[in-house]
Structure formats: C-alpha cells, structure tokens
View 1 (cartoon, rainbow, N blue to C red):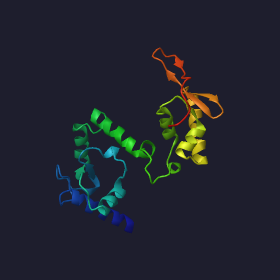
View 2 (cartoon, rainbow, N blue to C red):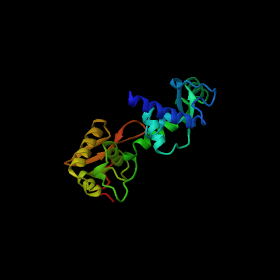
View 3 (cartoon, helix red, strand yellow):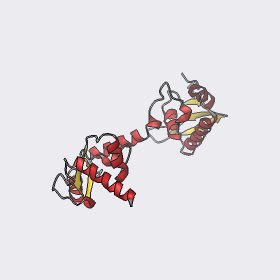
View 4 (cartoon, one colour):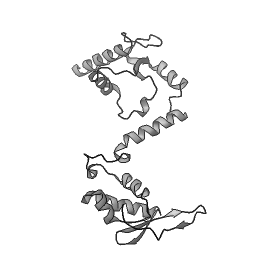
Length: 202
C-alpha cells in the first residue's frame, strides 16, 4: 500500500503542476484524479522517441524539473483534442512525425559513425543493407568492406547474412567467393548487371 500511496502522491504532484497549480483539467475543470491524464500539448506524444507512460512518465518529469510541453486534461477533453487536431496519426503532418520518430528511434542504424564510436558496437543488418545500396559501384568484395569498416567477426557474420538476404530478394548476385554484384532493374522490369565496375572501396 505504501508504494501505491507514493505513486498517487507523485501523480497528484505532477498533475497539479501541469494543471496550473490545481489538480484538475485545464479545459473543463474536472478534478477526479482517476480520470485525469497528462496531454502532450503539441499532440506528438504517440511518436515520442522515448516512450514513457503512467508512473514512469510522472517520475521522469519530476526528475527533469517539469519540462514544458504538457498539460493536465481529463480523458474526455484529451480525446476531443486529439480528434479535433487530427492527433490520431491519420493526417500528413502526423504521419511525418511518426516517420521522423521511427528514424530517430533507429538512429543507431541511420546515423553516421562518429569518431569516438566503434561500428562493431552498433551496426545492424539494416545498416549494412543501406550501406550496400549506397555504394558508388555495383561489384564489391566482402573483404573490401571488412577492411573499410574494420569489422569484427560478429559484424562480418551479420554482413554475410545481409548479403544472403539480398540474394533471396534478388537484389544481389554472387559472382565468386565473397564477391557480389548488385542487381538494378530497368524501367522495363528486366534485371541487368554492371560488369565494368571495380570492386574497390574508395
């Protein structure tokens, strides 16, 4: 019971702060704490990079000195606001927010390696697929990529698995031991290969 009381006190403290000094809905004044919640004022809560809810969110807000961007609403006003402002993910704006949040959550895949990071700690299969697709040439050797990225054994195995995946998807063709060629589709839908590209990583 002690933990429940502490959680209720924390919830009341946070809702009071974001309720402009009163533990009530800032829109209609409803004050039953059981039906009050925190609302993201900009309507982007669903796409937050770090998703927190309930007591975890309340604790985070208190520990970070109550950042702006929130308000206390009752459930009714929260739903009405979401509907009126198209905060359900159906509008183009919020689809863009969702897409951006996904990229940010997967930033370990999409971002470039910084000088103080080891690629062996964060590179994923999706990263390697993106890397291969962005090569400036169409034929390459796994050994070249091993050397270029200074990959350890674990990431080398992941790179090989990525190549097998791309072969199954008919995006890659094996042309020798550890050597591959990217497949590019013509406008007519027929595949063709580039035979005159050098498997050397610049």
